[in-house]
Image: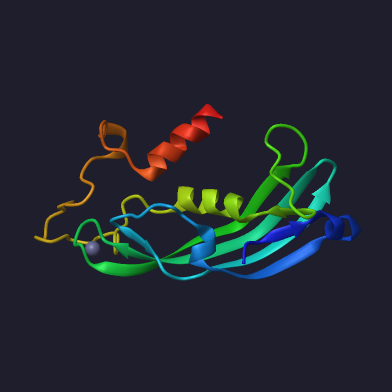
Amino acid sequence: MPILLNLVVLEESNQRLAGELAVSDLEFGFEDEVVQFSKSLKYELNAQLLDDSLLVTGDLALPIGCTCVRCLRPFQQTVSLKNWACHIPLKGEDRPPIIRDSVDLTPYIREDIVLALPTHPVCRDDCPGLTGKTSQTLRTADKSKSGGISSPWEELNKLKLKS
Ligand SMILES: [Zn+2]
């Protein structure tokens, strides 16, 4: 189930939301060599209605499967956003669609989780890599020097800069 914020309910009082959001509802829409999604996202949020906007704050945690870019071993990691805050305008161009008095919070969560995903996951800081040396066989290029290589994160970053 997507996380829906009902504006009529919020007019009465602040809302506390806690639960799990299935990977299928997050709809990441891309696949990645080094990050796999299989588990639900856990959330504990408070939502409140301000003048012409919604403010949602709380904690998000998504366990992910990673492939170490040095040794290529799979490992688990949790992307957590503590004290996450999301401000949703209810007026103007950036206003989300309001369906049956409700705003879907899921796209906002998805966007910030994607930005928080590791681009070069490493199983441990001092991982020696495949040959004992630091050999990065996947994604060798550094982001800033990569030039032609494009990842979903870079695309997202570009979008962010434009807006
Ligand atoms: Zn490793």
